[in-house]
Length: 541
Ligand SMILES: Nc1nc2c(c(=O)[nH]1)N[C@H]1C(S)=C(S)[C@@H](COP(=O)(O)O)O[C@H]1N2
Ligand SMILES: [Mo]
View 1 (tube, rainbow, N blue to C red):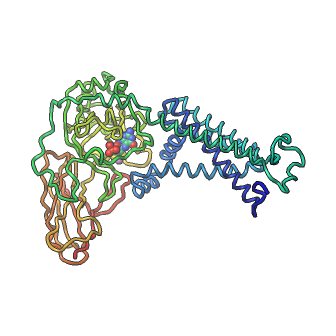
View 2: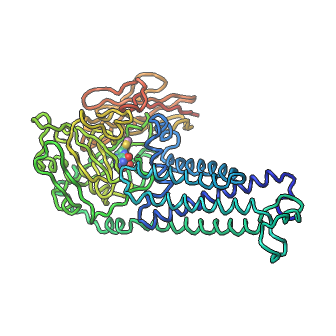
């Protein structure tokens, strides 16, 4: 007997085909919306990116922290998979429903579209046209489900064809049971699958080639020699020990923390930075070439993330080249609050709608707060904020290091809460004095005898004065500190351990340039950074 009527469990088979129809409808919807976004050169308006970005913004802080910490940098991949998996489940449900309520279920696909439209409207950097991809996708997806469900509920055609139109009363009797238009279903399903695969592939091609101008503009950047080079690092700033983090973090290894699902690719030739707000006597608009043509300084600065757990990886050190932020603010006529200026908060806005608030007083207190154009000798990588980002020594990234910068607004902390502050993070967050053991690794087995214990310690803009290590809660031993040219970078340290057989606990603590020793008290990352001592357990044999 033809068709699913021959299976032992025809109802189950029918439900399976219904679910498959739902999946095909969802694939059509997603692929066609992705293609529409690609054609509009708005990869960030693709359905998964848009919905994912809204999920990021709406996720409770604690869950977000958990995701960053347990899933690491891959957390956005998992987010994307999660959005797709939920969509698939919902779609399969609609597909099954379509067997009995065809119109209702097909209209249900429009719910996808509605979610997409709401999410698109919710994006701070969205444009009105961003509602088109979800509408196109939902329309086509609904149509596919309607057609497929139609074939599933239509009576079978005659086996040899040409007998007459499908759906003649009594025809299904010929097949001995409640069959369906198998051939029609296969045709529509194959067409939907092929079309969505094609549209999806084309959409992805368009997305990855979008930003061609941006890539070209980055390729054309020639960073001039700085007017003020970085103070030379003393020889020995990098101890070059196996397992120890290098003094300079290569760009490819530099940690990345941001909310962007699609890395913004900005065309530097069309970019400009606006400086305005309270107490700005002379608002400025600066192009990338304006910045390149100004006095450039080069500085080594260690950047750290407030989400870094004790011993964690979200800290890196780079040689930045850029313009002193204080020079720009002074030119705009901005005065520090201590000099009577009305604005105490500098709000940086990025092309992707991030807002990051920094104390004006800090930016103007003489430290090397930068509008960075280059990182370790190259133009900023796209992931790290091309064309221009902020870097302020001594502050956590979320209150200082805005990437893909496009606007600086002078305001007050009383008047404005930036993105993370609205999500319960502290408005002001100087980095906390921290130290990390890089080698030996936790639960490593080492040979008895001399074992170098080494790592990095940081307290940007206060400097590291001392690092101490102890084993099994014994007496603190002073580690050797690698030299560093300024207080704005981390310092490597090493301590030679005479390791005895057994299982040992090795612990580190740093003391900063103000004489304050890092606290042993363990607190989590919210609201202003984790504290506690990094401790590793090592087996010696
Ligand atoms: N536009 C934008 N800038 C941003 C962020 C972001 O989410 N969006 N994250 C900030 C945070 S929390 C940190 S720690 C630093 C990380 O910079 P990196 O990714 O270059 O290491 O960027 C900051 N700048
Ligand atoms: Mo961060």
